[in-house]
Image (cartoon, rainbow, N blue to C red; front, side, top):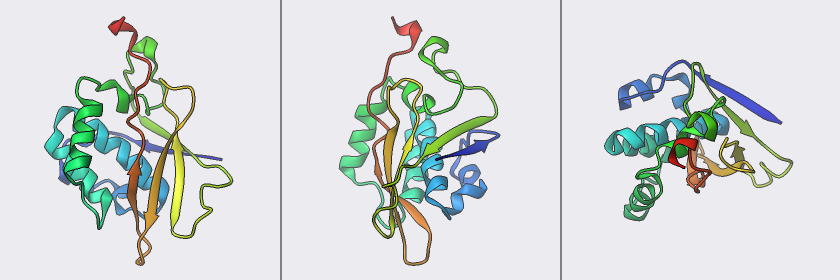
Length: 160
């Protein structure tokens, strides 16, 4: 099963990010999609991107290891988070078009553990969808537990 989440714009500030209805983190799908938006912002503004990710991380903000991991995976690879937007491809240099659509997939085991979800997001530069792990707080909100979306993908055609 898949869920499509659509955004009319890509937030540039934490205020814009927080004003997106999905920032309420009511479902794991919302958190997964918002993680893509935060990573998209990170490549242009690491400080804003980290703030956005910290909102999604809930009770466990980014630590020094997480921040270094983001730097290592996204420096010079702004195309990686763009690959999660429908309509992008290596052939079009992962250039998205509006509206911005993120497809989130689940499998029969996605909700095998109470209070936890392992969902998948399709990257146009990878052969298989990439996992993202989310946890549910006691108040019912969901948060980002493990971001596995930053693995390398096929380079944009203009890079070759």
